[in-house]
Length: 375
Image (cartoon, rainbow, N blue to C red; front, side, top):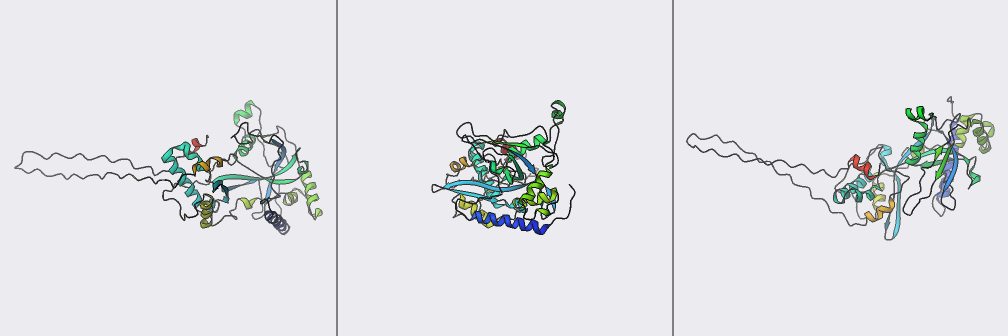
């Protein structure tokens, strides 16, 4: 799609109006609910199924077309005094800064792993950095809530759905040759495929609902630009200003950069205070002395699977004992004495003790970390 000059003033006004509506909803009882976000409707068996089309959006700041954004955050809960406390805050890594929560969370994981093994340490992964992805979607079918059909929302999802998207749109050479699969562009408004979004209830108690049965249609449903323009005109206060598909995207799609630009990050001290408060450690003012490496930008655990059920058990322990560092034996230097000419017996040399291996320091191994997640 050819780029043209955007009417930024109108776009910014629309964005500000959306933010104001969100703020008003956030102040109501029952918690914050963003009217722009899509939550799949579920039937009596807790299953959900809708047909959607992924749409690109226009980054108002950079004035360019984008597909989706990635949010890095710390999202977990913990029971303190029989009450559940929640933390869901952006990670400072998004701003290119060191994140104290990353360091503190990995320190706890490494300590537990060193003391009690990898299996026990799994629960300590809950506060570590996670990834969440955001994209705009057009609802094509929603049998449980038909009022949503024809509307555009933003949808947040995790690695399960991302993997399905990537594998479907980018088949391997063998899949292309043997199965006749073809690569396609997920966000192409001229020629893409609808996506069957399916939420499947857990089969047994203790399991989590999943999106593994979601899939793309095998055929394209063609050009949807006319539909987008009609939808934009019906939503706009100035329908005559909607001339083409770019005007339509600007009108109906949500600028998602707010979830990835770090603008909602707390400062380091406030973020650490929130972390300690959630764990009931409000008297603590610093991270553990034994700290492990913070995860990098591309390290996170699956957001579709919530490990928080295990963390309450793991964090019930009192302050964890600090591991005493092993003292390395000092290497004794043996001075060679020159033999005196009058003395026949020579002095025997003392054996130099071998230097012991240094303790590992409790750092997390990448392979161990992936294995602990069942990857």
